[in-house]
Length: 239
Image 1: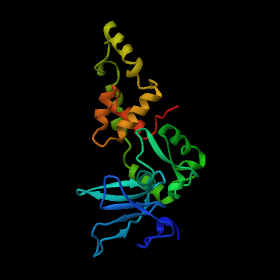
Image 2 (image 1 turned 180 degrees about the vertical axis):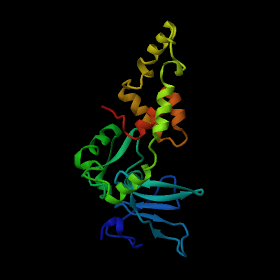
Image 3 (image 1 turned 90 degrees about the horizontal axis):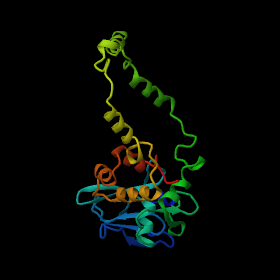
Image 4 (image 1 turned 135 degrees about the horizontal axis):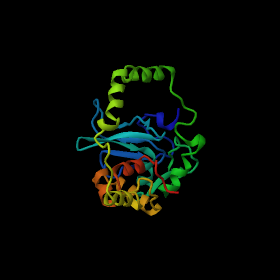
């Protein structure tokens, strides 16, 4: 039986426990990657929490405080309890690159941009060699059935775009408008504008703060909210 599957309340060999940051008194995490709850549940006041994997292949548990539940990655809990709180812009990295090995000795703190490079190539990518099942493909196909435009609808759209039917027919942008459009595509207003690595790190740090929305972060850094979302999903990364 693997560590994360063992729900025995008794300590395993060389296992030690420490309170989870911000959940003191309610939850503890061990140095080998198990999480314990002291909340009342089905007649017991102490139990080992079941773990499941998130979309990136990391083990996580569900913690509750003030009636608010949150998913927390186990390796980060181990690092912050047994090594120290992670600095802004840093991640807990599995030294042997095995995401199932959450022993404290297998964890170290490294910059986010360096960490992402470890897990986005080839076999390290969570979707490497994974494909939709036949059943999933069928469901996707069924969802898209009946959503095609009718021939009549297509003709109406085509007609509305032709010459006198087009509200912009015969109209042209003024020199002033053309200049504004040109200026808007330069620098930070250009969607393809390449941000500096430091800028991306600053935005990643803000994304870690629970009290900041993506809309607020976008306004703070003078970028679009969609760009913030791309950075959060690591579609835009440090080079």
